[in-house]
Structure formats: C-alpha cells, structure tokens
Length: 137
Image (spheres, rainbow, N blue to C red):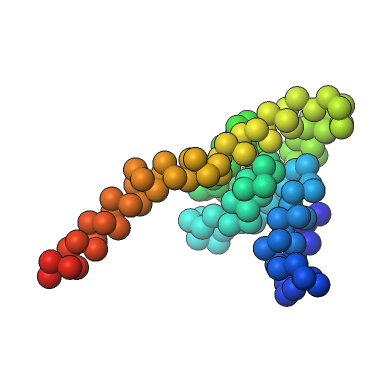
C-alpha cells in the first residue's frame, strides 16, 4: 500500500516523505485507469525514480510508460495481479530474480543520464527552435 502524502511531516517535505515511502517498498501497484485512454499516471514515474518496479492496470497507452518485463508488469484482472505478485515474490527476500530484474529496469527507466540524453536529443532542440522563432519575429 502506498499512502497518499499531503502537507508536511515535521521537518520533512512532501517530496522527501514520498521518496522515503516509495524507496522503502519492493513493488508499486498502480490501479490508475484513464477515462480518455490517453493520460499516464505520474505516480508511476515517481516509483521508477526510486527504482521501484510497478504492476499496473493495463489500458490503451500505459505501455508507453510500463515496459512489460523490463520495469514492470501489466494486469487486467485481480487473478492476473495475484499471479504476478506470487511470481515476483517467490523466494522473498533472498531469491527474487524476476523482481530484482524489474528493479534494475525501473532504475534504468528514470536514470538522470537517460533524462539528460532525452533532453539533449528531443526537448532542447524543440525549445531552442521555438525561442529563436519568437526572438526573430
């Protein structure tokens, strides 16, 4: 279970509290579904940022974020989720090869090096182009 964090907890910020909570988990479960089929749950991005793999409800665009058997798994029913949980936690805590593999994939998904690469290759050129068009007008 991942509690909703609001406000401040003593001297800790909400971000620090969320990071500590997510970082102490072994697996995230995302029950988010999209009425439009187009939005992605940012909580999954937070989970990946902490190296937390995810089991998520399957819907039309979730595979843009959750790469099956790389950083997480998808499910369409409670029985599928139960099977995934049993498989991932078989041998817990010492021998969880499938879970450890997904953890490594989750860390790779949101590593700062990957963010920097994506920024340099995609976002920065686009933003630079827009800025230079606006400056030249």
